[in-house]
Length: 83
Image 1 (spheres, helix red, strand yellow):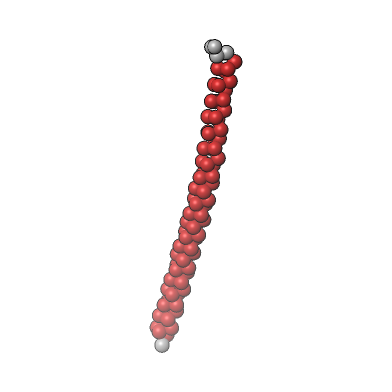
Image 2: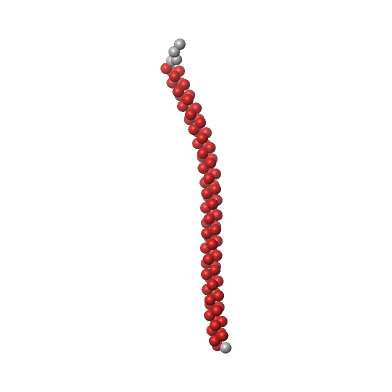
């Protein structure tokens, strides 16, 4: 006996549902992987900002100390000239 058209449609619909279920599982896994990558990138970003901040702070501190040293040298020179 030949298959009825409704049997053929049901078979196709079941195949579509199976494919959609497979794609759904893949999307869940991809979403999980993207979240891991996002967390890693956030950690890297935070580390870079911290590093740049420390480097900038060190540079400013160095400049401040260098200015103080220059001022002290000028004062010593003026004092030596008076003596």
